Image 1 (cartoon, helix red, strand yellow):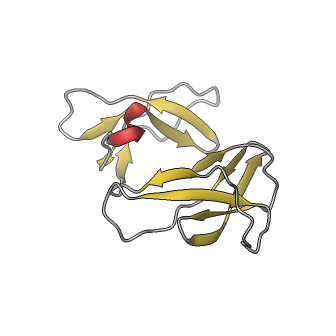
Image 2 (tube, one colour; image 1 turned 45 degrees about the vertical axis):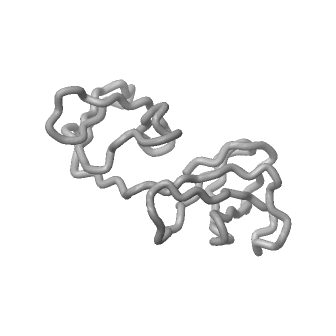
Length: 132
């Protein structure tokens, strides 16, 4: 997940619920990325996400925590395009299962290509989960 905030430093770590410290990828002083650990729970379970400058994961965590909601896993089965121009802008259809809009996260879908995030749109009339 991408964590947005302020005053992040290289070497910062995160914690998701009680699991941490988790290594964070430093994007900039306003963004980090972390891999969310697996959690054996039902879909819809919310846990806090917090960040610290203390790489050992001491007791000094961010005070304005945000909640992460665990959902059922998403599986990507494929895409119909694996080559694009360096200028970007090519239409890519992705297919898979679990690609459903549920709860608060339903506001929008995004796809990530390396460090670039782009808006995704559901393909109507498809017999399987399809997004562009």
